Structure formats: C-alpha cells, structure tokens
Length: 154
Image 1: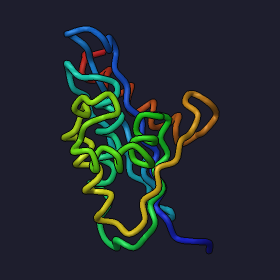
Image 2 (image 1 turned 120 degrees about the vertical axis):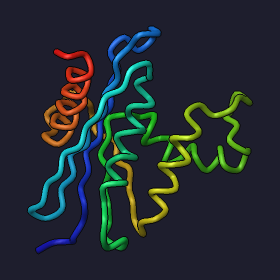
Image 3 (image 1 turned 30 degrees about the horizontal axis):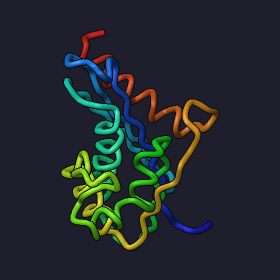
C-alpha cells in the first residue's frame, strides 16, 4: 500500500451572495484508506468565502487520531488555497492587515483554519478546478448544495 494520507475535498457556496437574505452551505468529503465521512451544513446571511473556509475548518475538526498522517485538502476556492499557501504569512507579519492596508476579512475563520492546520504535522491545500470532472470536488459541491436546500426547505 502507498503512502498513508487523508484526502479531503471541501466546497462552499452561497445563493444570493450579495444580498442580505442569502443561504450559504458547505460540504466536505473525507477519505482515509477505506473509510469515508461526509459533512455539510447551512447558514443564512453569509458569504461564499465564509462557506469555503468553514468547509475546511469543519473537515479538519473531524480528523481525529494520529496527527502525523499527511492531509491533502482539495478545494476549488483560489481564495482559500492562496490564503493558506501564501497570503496568510504576510497577514500575520503585518498584524492581519492586507495589501490594501485594510483589516483582513474573515480573520476569525482564517485564524481558526490556521490553528487547526498547525495541529497536524503535514497539511497541504491543493487547488482543483471547480465544476470539472473531479469526483471528490463534485461530491463536496453536492453536499454544499444539499445543505443550502435543507436550509431553504427545498
């Protein structure tokens, strides 16, 4: 058997992203060897970016046990992947102020995701193309949509 690792696909979405009365949802599909776990949830009055971050947070919160097993998080959100792989170092150095000299949005979620990532020895964030033919990404999207459907009663 090859390298042991936990594979996580995360997705978030928001219907009516720019309105005051919107529905958000997130989904995560986790796999370790033959074990699979699916998580999802919905909220009102949120943003797409918050849902993308929440999916990753909830997925990492669900990982228990050996902290040395590598984790690969696949996400179609450039916001999350670029944030964790690059931007976050500058934000920390600059006191959570972005390149436009404004406070970083969703700081609470970024800090929580950063903390959860740091509790494992090896977490990688990998960008995947959204709505393509990646089975794990498609499932995470389905879970996020299921959460939004549940929130609206559809």
